[in-house]
Image (cartoon, rainbow, N blue to C red; front, side):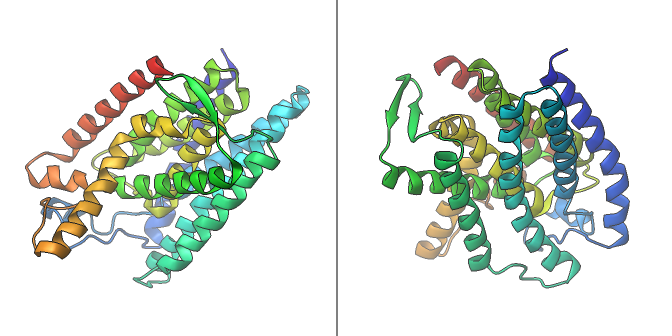
Length: 326
């Protein structure tokens, strides 16, 4: 059994154990979901369901990555081990921004949560740190892979840095918007991360295949509690974490443009919000029944489980296509 498979299974088990321990604590703290009155009526019964469940993924990743780091050091695989920790720290940084927002809203009962300007500033700061570390710390350069054409182009550093930052901010926001019904964001993210991890294994980036396997195990373990009817929601803690992981791995692989294919569902979710806002400002009417896009399909009569299955299958097919064209 490969180390990646072993880590995925171990992480999956750890996430489930932590889920059973953490969810009762969240219930006791009354960290419950707040549903919109103008949203799908079926969501009103979710009021009070524990959220901030992204903590389960965060703690799981910390435990397993730390254990893996120690194991790799003992196996004299120092270079691989040393590349895991920065990836963990950076991706957890995104999760912590979401945690602060959730904590203020749900524990401190500050309905506004973290100010949007502060949240964006935090995400921007972490993005800048990661992009600079990619170039200076990991020495990966600024060459970027162009799918279909199957070539790398070298982007000038003064263009690459803002480009990479936009990729990170756009991805974290897109995954955040995808998190709106039971199991959707976690299912779609698990498929996307699996695709990126397979690519890492294919091109021999052991650190990515190891880190990705750990994240997949954590997401799948969390998904056991997040499937409809969800026993816990990930909150911004989880959605920003997953957005950070996806963008961080894509940039590390030098394949951020691949996200235009494999992350099409989160992209469409984001576009639907932009269209809805712009159309409403111009006409006073709604273009979609409700945005983001998954709510539109719900109001058309689709059950939550159908939305998750269809969106996940579309993502799976797109990932297969991506693996064929790289």
